[in-house]
Length: 430
Image (cartoon, rainbow, N blue to C red; front, top):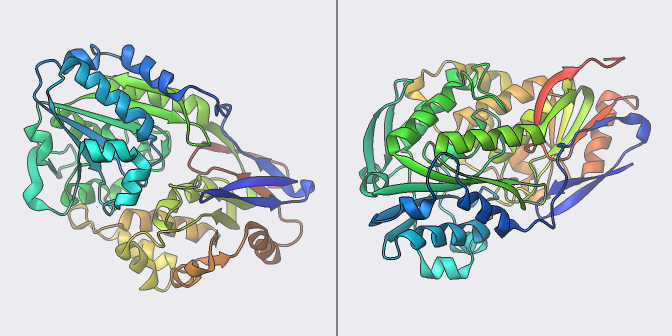
């Protein structure tokens, strides 16, 4: 059998004897490459959920803030943002509109990345600013989160008389789903606020997982932050495996996001099938630019791999490890067990950058041997982090087979961030 796995802007082709394949797990929705993306977005804007049309809400508003995603997200803003701005200006032609890129604690996008995301016309014509979570002078205090942390957000949120956002909805490995309230926290929150929200106690909470919003402490803080910020309207899209729009919701943030999450769950919920070896990806570019982001895809594999098995993840990693602090959690310690122990001991108010991603990756590494398929330029970084390297997916499978034997069984999850894995089925021979 041959199975294609997303890898950067291309694919890896896994060649596997059929008798070794336990399952190929894919979301239930069809690819929609011929869908009219603009028509889907226009329809959502014409029929918002729980609010009047945005053009009506924008009437007489002078300073409007539009929050959008950064370069690490596959939101097709070149499609969505012109329609969003058109709707706003229909109601308020002379409004001062600022587009704020919600970086959270990621690095700022380069000009090339902004051009790729928005298109030259938008970059040249519109006022686009980049959020900097470390700039304390740019923050405003919005109160205390339900968890007890301080809610500090970009001052532009306070200064606007209408705050709206755009984003996309997919399963998220600890917030339940992306989109909606995440544009505010972590999107335009201060470093201090993000760190508290991503503390070790919350990350290990049983409800802080893919597809889970109820009783999720991370989501609870994020939802509170969106309300405190006065987020009035969202436009969120659903994407297929080729990162094209197949659905959209717009309107009141909590209601519209809820509808979008229900649609996302219907499309992406699948049943786990346990195997010795699990092969997956982080969905290709732009989601697989660094090891940090690829932890998301590895959690899907973790749900299917047996203890002592092997996880293989294919990723372009054009941006390397994705964060110095994240890298040093691994490079400066002797094992995943040590990393997990050190993070578990950190109280919420002392949370440090990237510990949440390190905490989750350390958990996967304690369960299975982890192999990354990527360019050789990333080999030393991976080995520094106690991860294994392979030049292609079939070499990785050979490596795993040598470890576990010729009879080892394989589950393939081509897009690890595109599915919600439910409880494993019990298969004969498990």
